[in-house]
Image (cartoon, rainbow, N blue to C red; front, side):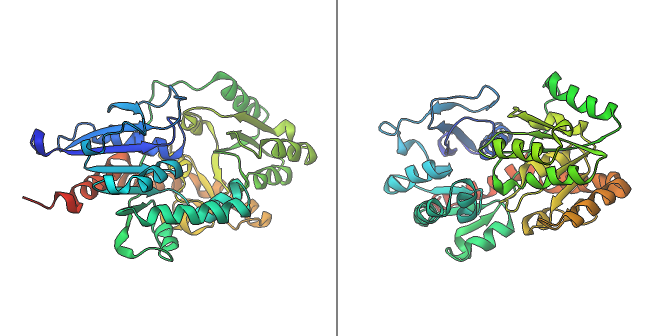
Length: 360
């Protein structure tokens, strides 16, 4: 145990307090490390809007760029472009700078915006990371991607981890009613959740239920593709078997009501919703991409080839035959590798290993 004078003081900076991907991960991390007597942790955010669904156990404060006391912290841990920019601009004042990389920078920016933004912002982001002391990648697949620009010694792999489900959070009745309505018609319900961008590949889900009349889809999330997806549902004549629920905080509370969960992404740095579905012991179908292959095996989830409807339809048949057994096996891997406590254990090691603390 560290003495009061030798506690490791850590400032974690996020763009906004919003219950989405990177912030959920950092929430899980600090809430798990909250009782660790070796650390003093404080979370800072940039935007004024605060999501009441973000519940962080350590002190939280909006970042004042002009009055931030760098001398109060041994480690600055940033997440996201703007926090990384803050770290870059103030690098000389920071003792040790860690940034967690949550995506494949060029692919993610192109899917979210366009090729021009991807090229411009992507290269700027690489420049920001060059001055950091350590870059944490959320998968080996992500690390391999960044080896094109950074040395292996600069890159660390720590898997994202999720906390136990808060059983006190009740699902919204309208979503459950939609699922019950489909079940009452004898339909199997597949669910998916996330920010609706082209990268998420949700259009494939609509084509699937158009081909498989015994299926219905419940899609949780919002994003720039929502309008296009609704138009596609009308075009494919599946609007009566497709429910767009919009953004829902704590989307994981709905997963247990699905017959199976589908994650058809073309690119992911990690895949938090996939882990959440496995945590809920839901049978999972996911795209056959490298990062998902890293996280799970054929004995744990069912893979399909991207943009291959025959492969996707076949994966549904496989889930009906062996999905429950796979879900149990996948859950065991989750308990070993992808919990908040496992993630915090590895960050604990990283925080204590930085050179600034290797002094008597």
